[in-house]
Length: 143
Length: 154
Image: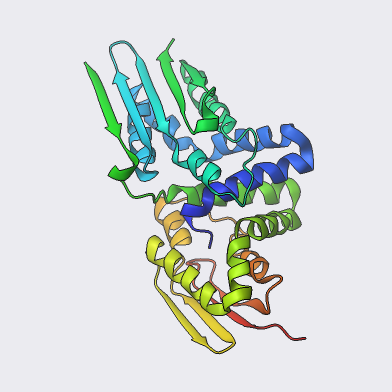
């Protein structure tokens, strides 16, 4: 068994493996597959609860991942945001000195969640500019 | 009205078992898209890279290094295991794999080749050490398994 605490390394190595086999296209193909086959819970929560579904989804995941974050929900404005002060996933990848993270590791958060949220009528704005410091932010806005 | 949640890393324990679901989904994708051998090749490559410090520790200290690794992992994941270490032989008996049990409890699919996360990964960890890993038994329904580690024959 690969422990869930070691999954991030396995994930990063998978992206590298896929890229070596089929280029960046192969990595994106996997991300699309993962969104379609694994993120049904996010989709269901947003369909049932509107933008609050984002709050419900990330309340669960970010707490279990012991992330350092600020999450804000404004239902009247139709906005949900996360400011990730320190991402536990990217943080681990940067800490493990014996492995080299997949260069576009953080991009999966852009592709996966965008693929779920945009067809449901939301704008997905993701700032990747500080991922080299394990920091990022995202904004989900009702169109 | 705005709702705000602020958490620091120290507020929670890092244990996100849904990652097992992502792993299983990844293996299903890899098998369907690239074939059985790709699953094994990927897991071997991952294990050789990520567990390199553990492999080096096994070469240095013997199977006790592996025993300590498994004790830590299964304590964290909440899995019942029996580990018997005697000289150059160690047996790891997992009553029910925490990853498989999590997937079953969530009604998520268990990849047909999920057992390779035990078989291939343990074999790869032992590569280059004086020891070999052998998956003696595995139950797909629960992930119950027995793995034996013995000294490599010259």
